[in-house]
Image 1 (cartoon, rainbow, N blue to C red):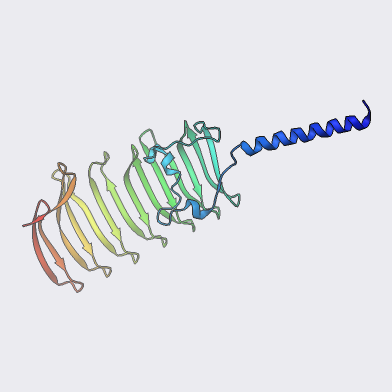
Image 2 (spheres, one colour):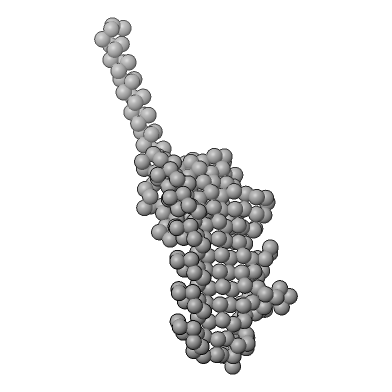
Length: 244
């Protein structure tokens, strides 16, 4: 075999291998990358990975590019190449994970306390805490939300089995209370409820009871309503949530 023919065969073989490799590469799913707009909910943040975490109520599976249930550490990235998500998966479910803003700041972190309890911390892009949520058996047990300034926005605490509330508070951004609902008699499931104007003045107040048979909190007894100057507007009597 002369030199020219050998060179020709080698070049032909080389082109064939390149062609086969290219064809194979075209058939392999490429790593998907995301823009911030694609994965960020304007109200709740980066929630697309929550659905894969049973500890916080998720029931969806994550698959590898080959179609298998994801195992071990998995990562996702922004189009820019910055890290978006890193989580540890078992049989397709996320056990723990962290999400990141494109600026590198952590967006949320899921940690497992034990077989029943988990903790989710969510942050603003400036690093301040946005929410701290404690889960029991996949359901929210306690939740604490904050405005971007750092002042409280919302507080909810439930009993250990998440059958009834201990308290539920909400606040205006100026720091004043908007609503206060809390248990005052655990045995009878009696609550007091107060609503406030943004000025801090009382808007309405009264008593409520948790009725397990209907799964609801109902107004009971005398309720008083006030105007923004503090004067009484009206008083109503309730029985099982209905005005008498």
